[in-house]
Length: 217
Image 1 (cartoon, rainbow, N blue to C red):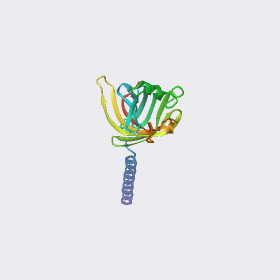
Image 2 (cartoon, one colour):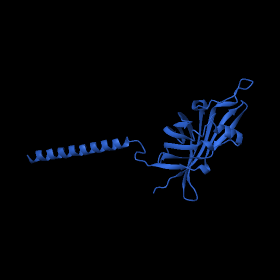
Image 3 (cartoon, rainbow, N blue to C red):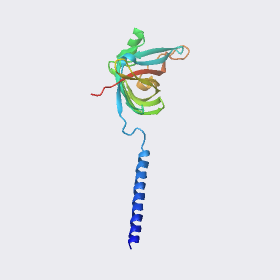
Image 4 (tube, helix red, strand yellow):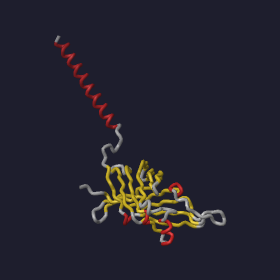
């Protein structure tokens, strides 16, 4: 009888050991299946306009391109601290700050034929989705210009992250995009003798954005 009881106890101990092992394997398997970066911190990076560039190019009379920029803007980027994946982009641009290094042309761009800055003083961009592959990214966002909102895609790269001599952490981005100005109600044009147009419809966008990591309170 004693031997039978000992045998039963040993069998029970073995079953408990196997059960604990199976539970442990199951838990670790579930944890291993979680995506990398779960619980990672999302950090805000404020745009530094003193070291950034918002530039555009548009064809002029089919023979050249006019280049301009906006000089007054603000915004931020939110980025996963571990994976460097973009989770938010928001920017507001003062439309009247358009600058093509030609006073008469800039005045025309500010009037109702183009930006209509009196009625629409700002334009905004807000991220809807982003995909990242290595240091490259594609961002899809809503651009609101002249009261009209359309999706605009930006493709670019995260150039790097570094600390400056004053203790700030900085990140740099380069990006390109394109929009059709007629989609935003800017239809003014004149026809040339050869049938071409004075101003092209496609506007190329070039961005060089430097951001400063926001300090936690």
